[in-house]
Image (cartoon, rainbow, N blue to C red):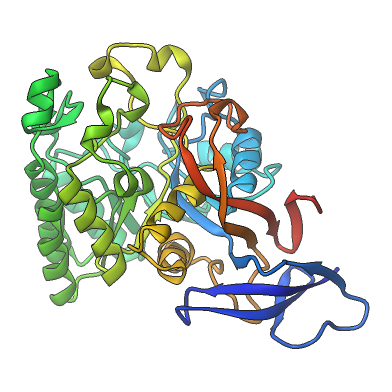
Length: 423
């Protein structure tokens, strides 16, 4: 199949530009950027809308195995396609966790029927209990792209240092969750006047700084490749910058919810705003947006965490943390674009190019030879989000009823339409 996209505004995260142009794809890959349609090509009129690399969403929770009632590979694929996400990087915090080649192979087979690409991270320790390292080499051979225990911090520093040393020998990537586990245990809000006023169990932002400092010290000692999954406070940024200046192989990500919401949104005790780590101050939010803009933070992700109604219909501090985000990631990111905090190329550098590069994937680029994983979207189209219209099995989104801008018009994976009129 040959497709020729015309009248498009190409969002190129490598060139950091948005330019009117055309794009041709053949046999699942980009053949040419610019130029006329080749003979026999099917024309796709983009109507002066934006055509960008498909989003690579790093850190998605899928409920298979164990919690299929919250999210299946099929429903996650439908939601991803509708949100312009062409590659899901799934977390290993399933029941049981993905901590052995057999469980990884099961998940890989189950994911084969999804509409989008799905790659898997594996657990760092067996059963995510922080006691014994997984068979990292076998899991890497089975297709694991990184290793993490997710929000369960490995508190045994000696074990974590051994994991990092072993990972360095394999060239494997370790993904850490920067939190001091003792301080952050049970916290539902960020400490301060607001949390005290609402009577919520809170944690100081310094818990993140302490956790990050420990992990970066171990990276300096072992030489491991390391990615901090969620940096959410301004006080963490100097340590990241020092690590980069010292030549450590360190990258960092953040959540779209921490970029677009703050602690005041918890008002009314709406449990859809309960996250791990908790929402931060407006000053922290703005500092993290600026860190994405200047490249200190490399990756923006949804941290899609489906929870059923029973898990959320509880007192705020007892409710399960997290929100779905595959389908809301792009329109939420448009809030940053329309507010002037980030340009479209800066956003797509963090949403697609950087996560693909860090994980060794081909995606995230608009160059000849790259996979034809594409999203066509209108950044200005307004709508009111209805959570029951989301394609995820779970509907726990903080954006329910919110006025948003940015509609996905079409999504292609390897040149195959998976969402939009052509799908």
